Length: 207
Image 1: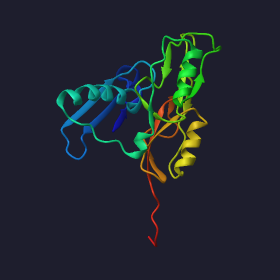
Image 2: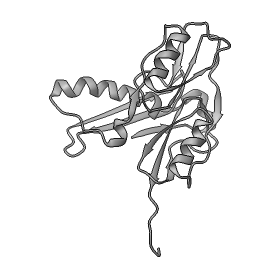
Image 3: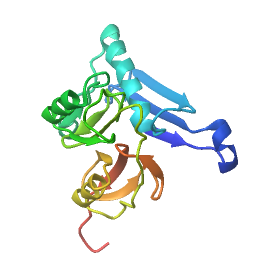
Image 4: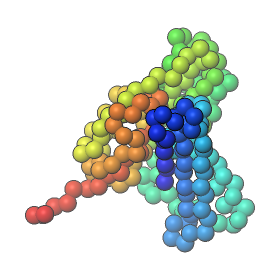
């Protein structure tokens, strides 16, 4: 479960955001709890699901085998996720080829395609659905910011389409209609940011 908190507007520059992610495994017989808290992140996103989750994943990938604990089996939806690789330090053309081959959509935020990747977003280690957006840029390019749309009440396919048009990624819990989203409507985020949504199938009957 990811979390993102912010201080009062008057204290934002002083205190900054706090990004967090907590993981429990195995779900059916909890033995390990991993809590990652990042205070005042200064590079890229400040969303917990984007910058704290990969850290928790890296910790657990090392800790669980050492403890002899099998991680919880992935659900069918999780099995379709693809882990983002690190393409910093290589040419844009090579990075684009590698990421597209893996199933991602690549967005070039620099003015040319003849440069070495200095930054990528989302970062390496994050898991995205096939077609997920990876933004690449050099040291002269600035991240592009967009406003998160309102997804509540939309069917899952419509929510995905709406985010794709803005070069935003989606993380889904459940199926059916979106009932909540972790980043509020109107919040400015970097292109490539993952918006986590919770969905629920509509009930049938007279209620």
